[in-house]
Length: 149
Image (cartoon, rainbow, N blue to C red):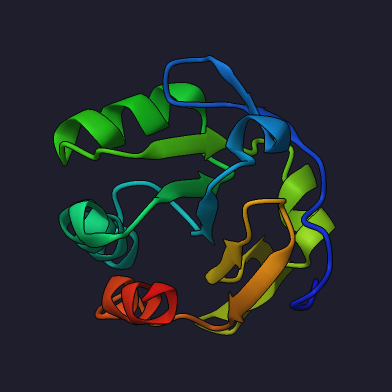
């Protein structure tokens, strides 16, 4: 897992409209990059909707969600919940692996690889300022807002 003070890895991933977004595109403002397991699931929907609702209160920061879901899945998720921020499709989980959130998980005794829900706050120059590990979806956007204030 990358730590505060480390540069965030360079990347270029498609958003929900298929447009490539890179780290360089995000520089110049604070960025909240949150990694989540799957579009349109209970926890991920709660987290996304909370970010949608607090986004107007986040001063000068951009929110970006990242999951291994497809562009098409992201578009459907964004439309269904009127999400007002960028979702990036990390279908080969290269960025997830680069930041250390692609991890072994367990459900009902079955082990599998997936995204460990994690959020990074980046400085205007793309350096990690804060890391939230093992995030609980409900109330997380308010936590991030408090950290940015």
